[in-house]
Length: 295
Ligand code: GDP
Image 1 (cartoon, rainbow, N blue to C red):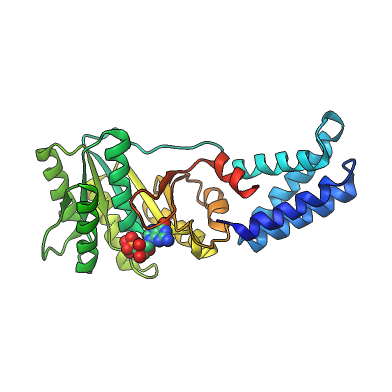
Image 2 (cartoon, rainbow, N blue to C red; image 1 turned 60 degrees about the horizontal axis):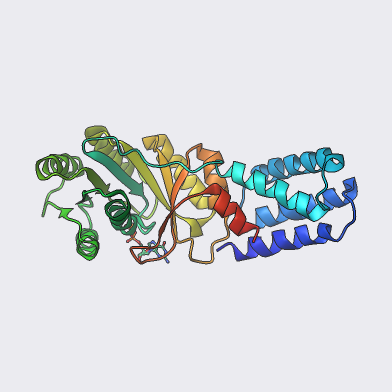
């Protein structure tokens, strides 16, 4: 994860480590390298520039007050700024509904169905919940089949309606089914398309309107970099979602999506997905992610 960003930041911070004392010149050099590393990792230029400006101001401001070496000081400042950029603290999901309804949105291939299975498994194993999975993709029978297989794998029932054409009514019926069968969480997996289009957005807005979810999670492939951020913006405008799920962080992703989605859409990343297996799901902690990025 983020190998190239890690290497470049490490190099930038290593260069200043050798210096005996922080000076305006070597801070400026280091900050420039950090900015370049962030932009190369697909962080939007303005975000990278603002962040490095804050790093520079803090480094020069704290110079006389600290006993840290220049390297330690810069690393700490960069770490704190990265944590802040990613939202500061970890935020959970709202499970206060009876049942709690969780709507899963995103483009086709982003990892929605896989995540739906993982989330159901997580809630069952870690939160002692009795989830119901709901297949709402009326266009791709294969997607329904995939959710059924995942449900079987993790021992969680999957609500489907063979041949039904209206996702909103499937979702509403599933909520009724959950109430009658004692399921306390309903996870609704929806249809995505390869790119944003009006029909998909109208459909998911309608599902959202009818089932009034307690939590709407937007799933996005971290490998898509700045596109991930743009897709997040479009889904947020349509759904005003509650949180983001970043997938495929096990791949050779550059880091831009993880670092910037939060500040662009002002919604927290809540989970990260790091593989195809049902266990490959983690709660997102900005602090841990910053630790990882800085090695
Ligand atoms: P959907 O179309 O949004 O429902 O996406 P899927 O859940 O079908 O996922 C698309 C592909 O990505 C599948 O082959 C998944 O196995 C794979 N996938 C999903 N999440 C991850 C992940 O975190 N890491 C990796 N490596 N693959 C993933």
